Amino acid sequence: MKIIKILIAGYFSCVASLSMGAVDVLSFGAKGDGKTLDTAAIQKAIDKAAERGGEVRLSTGTYLSGTLVLKDNVTLYLERGAVLLASTRLEDYPPTPSHYISHINRYTRSSLIYAEGVKNISIIGEGIIDGQGTHSSFKADEKDELKSILRRPYVIRVISCDQIKISGVTLRNSPAWMQHYQNCSNLLVDGITVFNHGNYNNDGIDIDNCKNVRIVNSNFDTDDDAICFKTTNATGKCENVVVANCVIASNCNALKWGTETNGAFLNFTVSNCSLWRSDYSTIYPRNERTLGAIALETVDGALVDGIHIDNIVSNGFMTPIFIRLADRGRNYYDGGPSQPAGTLRNVSISNMTARMHGLVTSSISGLIGHPVQNVSLENIHIICEGGGSKEDAFRRNIGDRNKEYPETLIFADVPAYGLFVRNVEGLRMQNMFFEVQNKDPRSALYCENVADMSLHRFTFGNPAEEAPLIILNQCRNIQVSGNLPIGHNDILLQVEGTDNSRILLYNNDLSVYKKSVGFERGAGKEAVRLTGNF
Image (cartoon, rainbow, N blue to C red):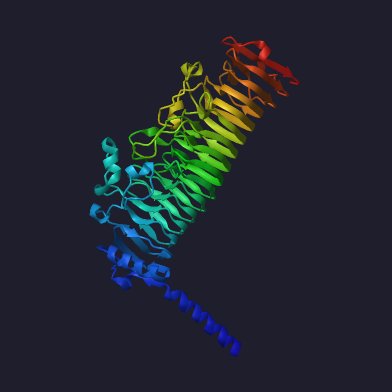
């Protein structure tokens, strides 16, 4: 009995010590009635908790607030039934200019929750944070983008912080981006729900020059990019990032690297995610806004190295896969130098099933002299919409389109319904299945200036018999094997141009083709060798 009493006493002592670190904002004068501005009371509670480290609790109620500044060792806890409601008065969001130099500084200066240069902060619980982004005070203006976005606060903006945890909460209706984490380390986002529709630039989460990041077990539904990685400072990098077990809906891009790509992107793992076109209508004045399921870009000089994506289901995006190296050359601060073209290498995408919505083909594209390097696609099944034009089927000399904004739409007119590949060195494709829903005169696969490619067990569906399934234009060291055709087609492979070499076809079923290989635009037959086919 004495031992039990000691244990009970110890237990209550622990509870008491824990509770001593927690403060309720009501005790600092907050009303929680949704009408009274509670900013000062909540901030007093944060400042008090920061003295020794502790928890700031929002109990059941609606707390109207402007900018709150988190401090070292503070946890903001929203219990079930608590709502942190953003004020709609612009004067309640005083500018908080960052000390971290980056491209994004010219667009951002205010937020509902702000932290810079602190450590061990958390926003947790089962409550809601509502940015009221549809209010007329935050009306966006596409004609004056800079002025428009500067007056629209983010919901969460965290800069140069370490040990950050966002867990359990629901985030709704930001006036702009929902969350921006910049130059941070050791960030965990776990089990959150993000709903962000109703204003321009409604991203779900933006990870910018951060390292050691985990985004797991979360749901996103956004009008703009859902999960977006950026490097808006050339001296920093995004590194060691995991995204897993997430459901991601968007009217733009579901998973995106870019467009701001000044610093490196290293060691990313994405797995077990579902990507969907949002059920909510976009506010943008065009119907084709749902762009890419996976959009991987470097256009401002960044090194991208080690991106591994596995076990993905996607439905409703125009373009399932968009991999782009270009040379936009945008600097990361006013008056600063632009960088030369970057490097994009060592990318793998595996076990992906996707259904397209629209005509914009998946693509992997680099530049002459700056190819995309070492890409692996394995166990990919894409249901393509089809319906392309004969004009596009015969289109060549597509051009770099180097200075265009790097979105999937820049390759809306390519001569392939399944995959367009241009300026790539080292491409391994295995167990690829492209099927097409509507008649399409384009080829399933078009490759231009591609070297060191292996295509093994590639299954095509192509209702246009006259179209070659594969076109190789100025390609070198290519292996095509294990092809399993569906239906009948005139030509398996068409070789074009005068600079092709070492193209090998082996162990393919050629029985359904009128001609296994065709030659156009000066292509020589000596570039191709067939062996062991049947």
